[in-house]
Image (cartoon, rainbow, N blue to C red; front, side, top):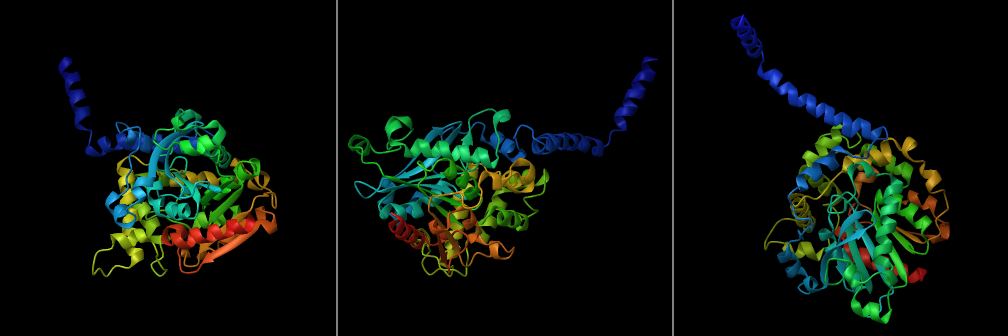
Length: 426
């Protein structure tokens, strides 16, 4: 009898093929996809596949994200900049941020700027545009969007959400942390400089105007934050930021290297596993090779007698910085953001109710690059967001020979346009 049982068991084991073995992890993956994808999109925890994978990859890495900037390149282009730029970590609300801070060149700057990088770029890549703004008398902070780069939630997975209103609350918290001089001190952040220099604190000479610079989808939650906080956010600069309706059109026309970001479940997994390739494709798309590149960063990194254009050198630099950021655990939940903002927008939020037309009183500059094919090919108009603002408050600027990353490709033109505009509204 025992022998028969042994033969039966052995026969059952012998019938297991490699296909059966492969099926087990596939079933597990499908269950994970359902929980982190379907359950999430039906109003679950807000815990996404790409966010979950990023957190797994960050385990064992230092909690304080290091600079991934190529210091040799910066030292060659701006030898004095490394002495003035600082990276520090700051906790605002339920999130921890890595902030690039540049001291102003004037004793009493009239403006302070919060510059939010557009994914996949991290704040290291914003060093040149931040420097150009600084040269025009502004105190500049640069950071990454919530969930992207090294800006991460510090609450449990079940408490995290990524709706437009949640992003607006995040932006409000960060602006209050960095802009409100009276409640801050240099000891509140991990860094030598703090939110403001000790001299500014002692003299009480902080800037009187707070400017928020955002790109693309970030304009949606920036408008919500500005509408709710007119005393905290005095003016806005939008780069390539259409209206909500046009952004939906743009997002559905934008594709990663393998599939659309709007594809539920699978795109969250694929874009995270292929984040280097996906981000490289976006950088190629957003830096126009036909446009003019005036970045001193790219000029400083250019090899002698190279046939590469300045734009091509800049693309290579940005890819290197972003790849290094991923190696240090930077987040890139681009599919989750796209789907939460655009796919199920009718059930998640009624944007017209959040920001009615002609409801924002702060001045806004709408800037975009004339060589940006990512918007024109889907019929998206970056100036369409003017409908949310009082008409006299809107200014439009087109940099004809720049691509999607206007501020990165032509930082001097960007900073000059912003400074000129601010002078007209003061």
